Image (cartoon, rainbow, N blue to C red; front, top):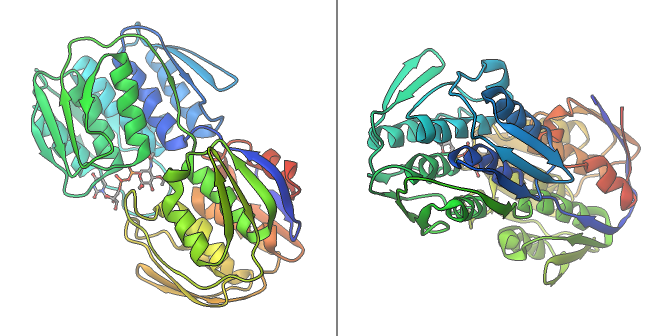
Length: 415
Ligand code: EPU
């Protein structure tokens, strides 16, 4: 698929069911390497990032199957091979094989990971943590050789509460000797989901979801059955769609408290939202009030919803502002919103959006995964036809996006 074509200004009504969280699944799949027996992971989203991780596991010699969201993984016979760069650079989460293979084999050779072009994305905190656990890190251009005679528990303070470093260090420490404490850990729900998975396999991790995680190393991890939590970013994207053009649009299978920051901001714009257990109903309000958002680690406003929300800010009556504090290049989508008619100025990590402006269907680019979601939302409210190029970015993280939107009344197709 190369393009998504949308004929905008249709009302969305009905139910959208949310899939499993991408950023949880992409950590759970590499984490399965730590088990000496088969693990089963359910509610795995059908996205291309999952396919890339599947490819890596099979390359290493694992037995993998994927059927209706259930992934069975047996890594008993895997060998510790260098993962070819053309596979590892397909996605960011390939870096979780560093922690997982280091834990299993005490040695890993891996290339710098890929992922969206949204900033410099260093992995220094992951490497520093591995070193504190007793590993030696050698860098040859973009290849990393990480090796340890033995991994030993340590106190690790993260300069930044990095999601990736927190997960990678939980993986590396799960079978290390003694106790590891990760301080200033990231608190995202996906980290809790990974810690529960590891604990189900026999690990001893406490404190995930707080800024201090304690891991007591164990010798062996075994089989388990585990479910991926609902994708709060996918749910947030469809909530924004509901605010923009929904009439009692129901977003089903969500954990509402994972969306507190977005819901509170949507309410500030004047959007009416009703929450009942695991579903949220949302409709377009008569008008939107302008808002200020600043992206932060969980439970702050998620950077991954900043780009989708920018479409809504073009519809607010007055001046809205975005301050992006996580990724320095996460405004590329704004140029395309401007092409569609938005009034936006941005510099450094701040953007000012003045509204309300009509958006006109245009030919635009999915600059990255969430930038692509921003364009889909813009296409849904724009006059006439919007053509989005480079949609592979979108398919990396949104399970059946076209079908889900079509089912609730959008005129959207792939070409
Ligand atoms: N950072 C460092 N050094 C490191 C690691 C991170 O300086 O060693 C910095 C980053 O440059 C960034 C900040 O710390 O400024 C936070 O980065 P983090 O490590 O938390 O991000 P990540 O693990 O690479 C994950 C998600 C991203 C999401 C961020 C923040 C996955 C696979 N990716 O990335 O998701 O934006 O956390 O929540 O879990 C997306 O889904 O579209 C996406 C980009």
